[in-house]
Image (tube, rainbow over all chains, first blue to last red; front, side, top):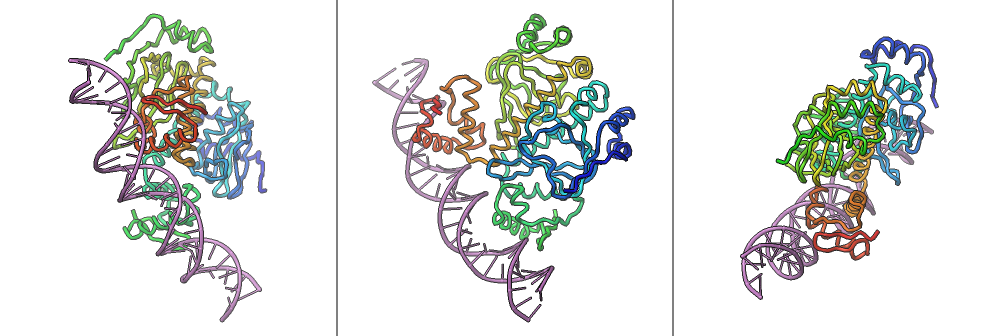
Length: 217
Length: 217
DNA sequence: CCTGCTGTGTAACATTTGTCACTAACCCGC
DNA sequence: GCGGGTTAGTGACAAATGTTACACAGCAGG
């Protein structure tokens, strides 16, 4: 399954991705945490899973989904290097079940921080405490933006928002996406997405190709 | 505007509503915080506002809304005594603008905790630190449930969810709500709500009266 | 070059939700 | 008991989204 536990090199990874951490914190983490590799498309979390550690993304990218009982997906936001999964913190803290699912979109590395360490880190290291609060804050705001979108906006506006997001993440105007992928992420159907994308093409907002959407806005 | 700043009785209020706090923390808070009264329907927060303190609800009830540019509202969740507003914590911590609006649904009291105190409380008082994390966690989960609802569920299921929520909050099967209020909270229109409520009545799920909805499920 | 698979286009239709227009029922103060 | 305001019910229609069904284009492998 491509899972590798690495003990070496943790310190360097931490220094490069989490430069804001104080040196003693980095040492502490390097001492007690391991890095785990994930393949593209591998799940980092699934609904109903329990956590023994919280995850910091060191390399790659991770998509965070909400899933309902029937297996429908709904994409919420994406994490990159330097981000932490607020949910894994929350669940870890409470030893509770996860309500979401996370999937690596490319080969990724995550630092696993044992729950047992959390209290000590929180009270002993100011930069950790700020990091955790900032993580909560930004995930919360992302979630608010998600609510905004589905509560107030129509499908075409949401597609636009989605494409903008993808562009920012891939740092590329040409997106390698199928209509079906978008439909799944937005919990809609391919036909609807095709229809609306076509309209956007007519309005000159995108150029469509097989497996690619070029944003022109 | 019915705003009163009280300095007396803070300690008793804290003890009754936040019994989990350690005594030294209660003293600390009583020393540095004030209680503020809000009238029914008065706004505690509005979008674009800056915070100098974070708010703990001591008495009453507060509705948390998302608002869009056109002034549409979308109800997210409700706070009662013993709850804290995660957003006010987040914004306070970052001295940032609020993205939401909060309104008292009945005469309410809130404890105002100055931001300046946050660091000290967080690092010095374990029960405060747990309280803050638990606040983030539960708000985050409420927000996830909101996403769930609007992403996956149809209007009638959402109404059901809404009514269940209201019932839990008011601890009463008979809800004093107009269809228009529900429509506003759900960012829909009165006619739609009336229509669906009527269907629910035919299915025996509710009994409808003027200004009242009696839940039978 | 044929074949089969995946991705896309599109028409027709169903369903859900929103809007408009109007009526009726109820409630309160005079 | 009579207006006037608020709340609710309803039909007709519009718009958005979802569904079904099918055609077709591009590409990869034999």
